[in-house]
Image: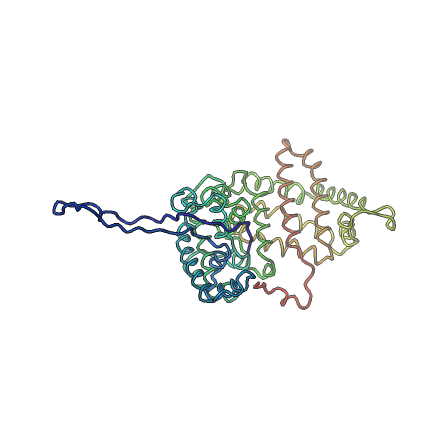
Length: 432
């Protein structure tokens, strides 16, 4: 689970909603007495135990919380019954707090409910909306409906996370998704931070999850099954940063349409035009060859900036289908962005990059560093062609950079070497 800084704190004068005081009012049939009896309720300061709260949101049963608390050094010698009574009291308080955790902005604004400082309140909210990556991974690509809710017991068994915690995380993402559906024209990260009082890193994670779910980006393909939540979170950030509009609200409508049009134009100019393609390949080959160290034995250059012999062989067309493979890779790179306005292309974007770009590089014995060098060189030497042959080159050059840089970064994150004979076993998604 993501850990967020919080601390134990003490509450004083806990004010619960007060009962009706109508019994103190006299009606017409009653006479005022000379004296009256009152019931006074005095409460001691309430302590919110941070450890118990953490265990509560994890869904731990009482006996496990008691056992953990008794293992603390300062609890040695304390009777189990006393610890159990303390834990039950704390859990009762947590149940009261949970109502307000579902309404975090209200919880922060209504100070009379619980006299907590802002830091303490925000710490509780941040902890409550934290999630386990193994659980959230299973929610990617799923509709957040009642059918998914019935899957929670199976998910708990698969991940080893208690059902109560899985349910909390499911309801949290549903609650945030519902809020996102009701708001239009507002950047989603800002909306989540404002409505749910979450920190920017956590709000950004939720925005990435919703982007993948709203656009139905498929993360369940077999070629993607061995990647973790952090990989898909990164991919979502790249899709948003490079291929959506600057004011994106994370929906399909915010795919940058001018970008897709320029990508289609660039594909025709740089890939389908034979003269331009041959000129580009020649420039890229000369540039990559110049990166070889002059004196290999005394070179201090990083290996990530030195092209491999396989990349040089590919660019020099010494392989069976060198230029054909380069053309196919560039055609796919531009086509993904050119067609990403179609829901099916965006849905399958990650699978296409792995199967048609990453696997192509890996099958030729190339490294992820080679792929980065290749794309960087293509961008560098395509600028000259674009400048000469497009009337207004500035927007086209920007589109070129966004298209190929996004593809490069996604490919590097999803890069894997050629599968071994044990590949099918290695593709089983980890459950922890």
